[in-house]
Amino acid sequence: MKWRKLKNNQLNAKKPEKSPLHNDHLTHPSIHEMTGNITVDMDVIRNEIGHNSDVRFREFRMGETDIRVALVFIEGLADMDLLHNHILVDLMSVSPIVTDPSFDNSSLKDFIKNHALTVCGLTEVCSLKEITSGVMFGSIAILVEGLNNVFLVGEAQAKTRNIDEPPTEALVRGPRVGFIENLRDNTALLRRHGKDQNLSIISFQIGERSKKELVITYMKDIVDPLLLEEVKQRINKIKMDDVHDSSYIEQLIEDNFLSPFPQVQSTERPDRVMSALMEGRVSILLDGSPFALIVPVTFNMLLQSPEDYYERWIAASLIRILRYFAAFIALFVPSLYIAFISFHPGLIPTKLVFSVAANREGVPFPPLIEALIMEVSIEVLREAGLRLPKPIGQSLGIVGGLIIGEAAVQAGIVSPIMVIVVAVTAISSFALPQYNVGIALRMLRFASMLFASVFGLYGVILFFLLLGSHLVRLKSFGIPYISPAVSYRLRDWKDFIIRVPLFLMKRRPQLLHSKDTVRKR
Image 1: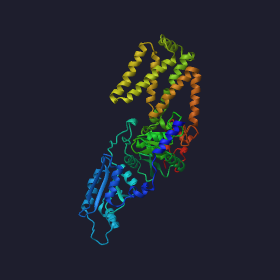
Image 2: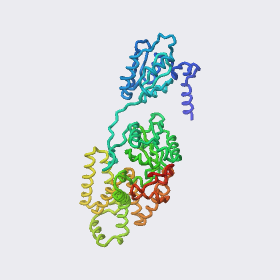
Image 3: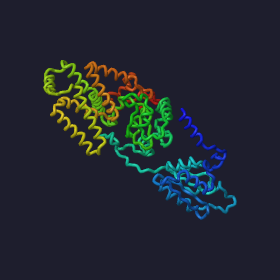
Image 4: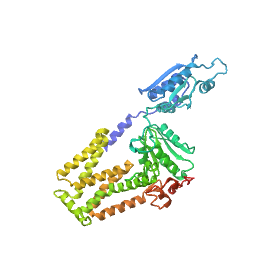
């Protein structure tokens, strides 16, 4: 206690008494507002952001007059073509009539805005914070002698990659375009793809320190207003210093953060986004991220692919059923193997029992440990393949799995049928079109194996019931996650497990409560 009192006394003693003369608003009014004196204003801006090595300052005279002009911009971020070919050329080649007796600061501002600068997107600011924020975001600040307003021109021009087919959602048939990291290019892709005047785009600024632009897109005459308002409220509640990627948004707006299932769909394909908007859903795009978010989402959406609508309905329906079967295999086959081998061998055909028993002869581990060894090995190989360069990663995943499986069988650690079970499970998880759904099923697979090792087939059934009860209660923005199965809507089953012919899909999904329910007239 004595030490704390002594420490507090020392800290209090070090605090100087603040005089009224130290009020920044009184002694330095130019800290917050521009004065019109270009020398003073430039000194204030230099003191604020001049320590950055990429900040550039350029001073010159307007035309043949003595009016001083200064530019402030970020090298590598500002639009240099706009700077060189428009701003500098425009302001250095024209001269206002300063000898006119009626010429004043208001006339000078009007001359610059309406006669000198041949650029659009011209805004006027007067505070230091607005100027520095604009410059740091890529705008070019124009200071003119005698004007206490500063002009901000242009936006950030960053290097972007080409618009190619997204590598995570490759299709055999369909458009070969995908989103990139530039937000304006992504919204332009939606505009070109949709060409609908009802396509609405609303902008938000998120990030407490590092500001980023976020937009939500929707069809004005289709979307449910309650859904749109819920999306806006959740976005407005985001309070973070910096939002690096749209995956941050996904985690911050989802309904249940404890659920292993994704409640927001992410995609790089503009055609998938437009299809969702036409159904009455809402899309979210973030500057700097190539992944768009779609809400609300249902589980059957995560097992669908845009290619389902580009192929004829019979082939598309069969492939979709195959995906549901692959999801079941990826989740339950290892646990069923453990349950049958450990608890219910009498349910297996006699010849198969003899074959399995012969293959397992000499294996020192119970089925659970055997399955865990192989499943963990496959997961490690899969993760390592993602982190390595693509040619090496693909070779490691295929060759490594074959070598490790064959070596484990030769060493008597696992049985050959266990290698087959794990291989079929891994291949089935790759058949799912959404990567995050595969991750969820891979996590739940281990829980299902533990239930099977304790209770046998009853454990698998118990796990299935628990999983089903969780999915029934789970919602995405108020929409039941396993709709249209729960709540039951027969009309929406036309695009559920099978996909009926397009001419029969006349109405939008009933679960979204769209304002315009007719899809095909």
